[in-house]
Image (tube, rainbow, N blue to C red; front, side, top):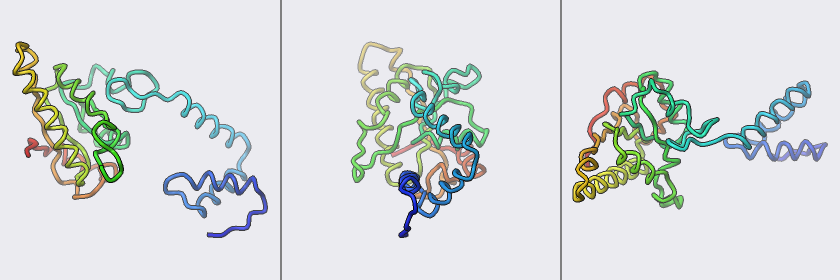
Length: 218
């Protein structure tokens, strides 16, 4: 879309707004004009909220979920079942699972999935910290809740192998306690359509997928 802006300030604001994902220039122009029509306090409040978010937001030291504190509210909640660990791709997936109201365990946010085409390898994700959490003990079940895509399945397989290898290494050592902590590894039922992203799955389907999870196998 070609637009002849009467103001360079307006053009700059539209240019910046259109950089956001899913926001084209027509939508960006509509949003900017909407903000101009509002009281200046509205715009100031929005700018302040974004500035505070960018400068003060944290990521949980345990699960890597977005948080206001070093340890998020989910990880620090004593009412959550610490024996269940749900592995998800991103923060949106945590929100999607929480919206079902059917899961009361903990999470581990990978920060993506293995995708060589996009230059994302295992070292770019929070996989090592996941293995360390599992090997620390206390986890009875690891739920692989990644989107049912080729990249998600590849990541599931890699995680399964890493945890299995860590368990075998523990079994070969003299530390019998470490050798007995291998949890059950399950995968959510494929009520989630193939190639669909978890965060875009409706709550009922996602809830059934969690209820019908099955042991992960290769």
